[in-house]
Image (cartoon, rainbow over all chains, first blue to last red; front, side):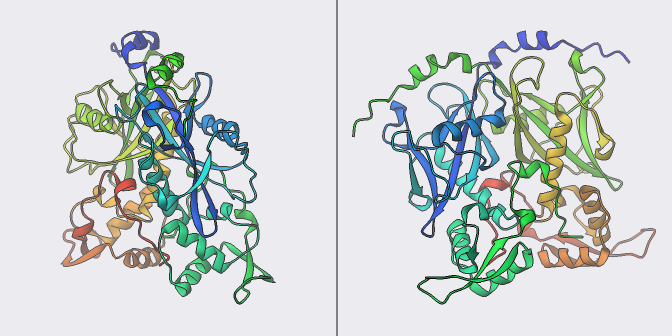
Length: 244
Length: 244
């Protein structure tokens, strides 16, 4: 069957020339965890229009770079971080979101263990901030942060992603503190332990905490098969069917 | 504190001129359900390079249009569909994914009840296809379809989204058939009913099926508070904390 409406890609491009003037950026929401606080890594905006405001780590996608490679480059260039957990979350494309022109941005979040990752903080004023203490940010970055935080909150209830934020060995008390920091609410100790137990994520190490200011708790680690979280969690993992 | 590195947005734009030559498109994965089959709405590609191949419904984002408005326009223009459930899923931005030039696409999925939505199928060869019978598609549309299907599979286990695909009143048998079509696997009847019961999504109507070729089942409907699913599920709903 002949489709007479066919056009070539070259003709398609010429007839849509005014559409090819958008820049695409990536913005990285780097979550860390320290002293029972969920933190995010921010930098002072280098745009006059947002002078004094904090902004996410981000950059324009270069002409010879695949979209999903860009956040890794940004992280490496700005912080020296390699091999981190990164997940694409959402795209933001309101017409006037960037003063330089039409910039559609793709948001990714990452989880890093603040203590075990030595950051190369070469940029001016790159700092960890408590997530709860941020209000006004540059661009639409507060909305992007909130969106990524919500994704993280949904994710931690179903997938073992938060172990990127903990040391190798941890107590259930430490794990609960972390969940509370992420979810922004107190959790009932018994219910929390019951639910975590049902997930079957942990191995009891038969060791106890030492030098703690409370009754020492048992130490656990994440089961080895779960240790390496794919950076592409949404696409490469089979769905676990809880209904079966 | 004076930050001497500040630049204006205008200067930023001039110094990155070669970055502002990307087009952004949206692609819609429209899922429907009929005769125990999960379906997707596709159109023959109008590009010579993909002659004869099926493609998702999509279009370039216009210069005066917010990103998230584009999929609604596409659906309305191509099918006449309004007020449908739409969720942004993932962005695809490999350098050479589109023969016309650099086009980054944002994928959305939608769920429509095939019987209750009268489609204006004005376009040539716009058809429903069984999801399981698609292999090769135009562009990277098979990857986009698979990614959206996986998101749907994850979503249905936690959120009451599938009721967009069912009539107002349905039996648990019909609901299980739908879940099986989406998840691509048989489910154990008892376990399925137990899990659905735990979700507390349904109201027993105290009515029975009529004119069915099997033993009539009880009829249910979705609880009224759950009926209207926001199109912006990821961003506007509070997280239900299963752990609390």
